[in-house]
Length: 101
Image 1: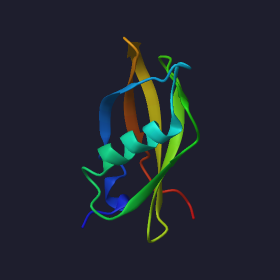
Image 2: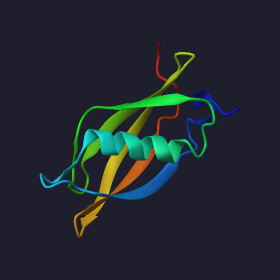
Image 3: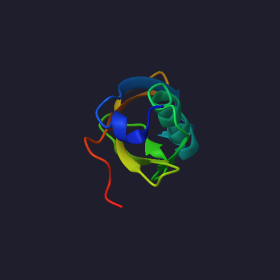
Image 4: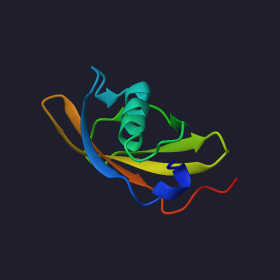
């Protein structure tokens, strides 16, 4: 079983999502994308919580938190790397260490 603690530096990826009409990627879509990507390396159940909608502009960032049933939390920075044809391409970077409890 892979837990959150074992992926602190394992997950970097790019993903394209359609931006909604407001020029933002909705919070639920960001959370789903983070969960989908990190589920590739975390086998234990976990939840994802992000700050809010992510503005679909290059360089915009948002923080998300992965949390598991044991109370471990790992921060993830989501960065928009480009926007083209109504799609925001994002990079996910997990923190090097678990968050303090």
